[in-house]
Image (cartoon, rainbow, N blue to C red; front, side, top):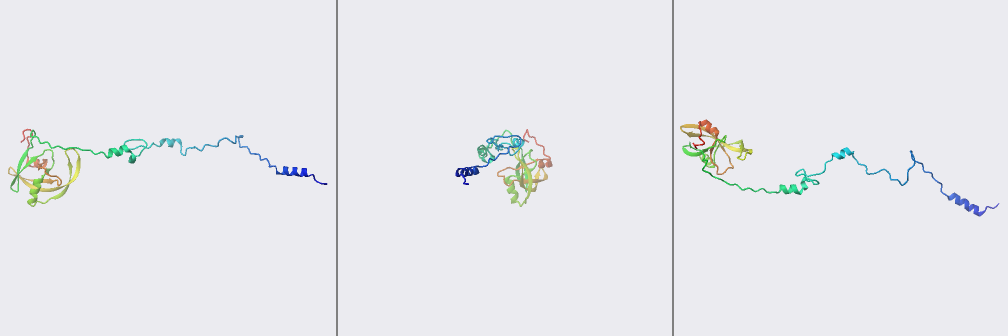
Length: 204
């Protein structure tokens, strides 16, 4: 018995038909194949931690969005130059109290300073003492300027006998090496040792 060629062709077509694959439904029901998957914009850190992050700002002036090294406002303020002019005013309304002493047989004129705790040798007296062979040693002192700023400086120190009204007063002199043209000031240490009472109002 001969096979019909048409039947053979149909069998081949049926053989080539693909098998239908049934997709398994997910647990809990089916979903649309085109539905978007889980969102990828998930924060890496909890929201409580993200809220604690402070925005960038300059800690010099508070400008937001920049750091101090790149802040134009802070750098501009740091490069400003403050200029000032100093004036020297000499007034005869409040004259200084002058005291005449003797050192190595020579009379010297010095000023009394009730605001100074130590006796300061001026530039001329410093050179005078050096000419008479007086030696000096270094001493670190706490020095307050007229503007109220206190600083530690290294001064020169020596002890010299001062003669006044028949008394001999061993007095410690401090020398400020960097001071130029300054006057000799008798501090409270000498005034107390000599028993000198000053009449500031009368200038005596």
